[in-house]
Image (cartoon, rainbow, N blue to C red; front, side, top):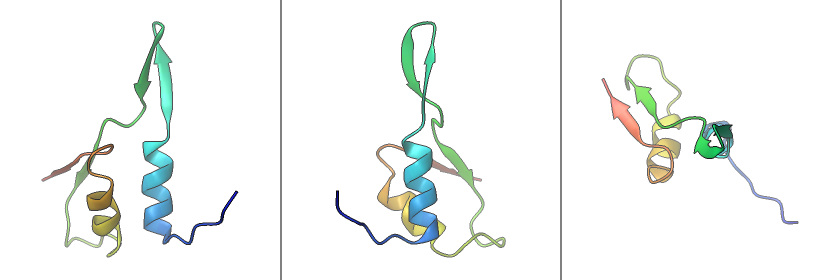
Length: 62
């Protein structure tokens, strides 16, 4: 097992993307995506982390 250095935002996005739920026998992502309003007090690195994970955790902007 190797250690990975991540920012808090990267770790949070990875943790959200790794969550799964089983609904009626079908495995689905617990978080299908996220809504974001950038520039209104969000953590600066969160946008970069979400962009890097856009294939597994789409970001919709308000």
